[in-house]
Length: 138
View 1 (cartoon, helix red, strand yellow):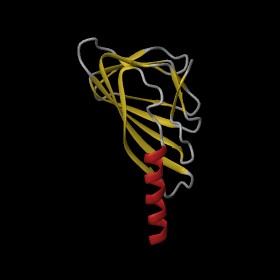
View 2 (view 1 turned 30 degrees about the vertical axis):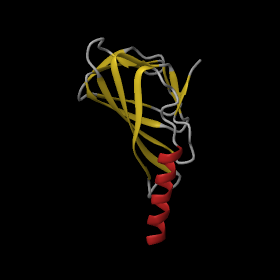
View 3 (view 1 turned 180 degrees about the vertical axis):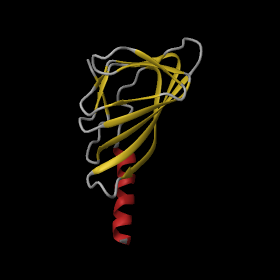
């Protein structure tokens, strides 16, 4: 059991070190890895949390996430305008959440305010081997 714990810790450390959730840099947007851990009862899966800070008027470029990624997004502060796939654009305020299923596109993700910052917590359930969590759509 101790070997399994050590292996899980090593995988989590590797996930933090190699995951690149900030590959889709936008204007006035900063993504910071916050947590990564292999899920012990789901072999090959990891949980990765990323905090996304948006300056007033900040935005992420249109992007997709790792094909295995299920994402739960929670607005910590401010208001975030988001669109997933071809769904409607919607503004989520502090305390509200949304999700993205594996294979989804995220054409709109931005601060809904031009004067106040916003913060989003994105929690990924993803294949442990996926290194590129976010890729810009050109």
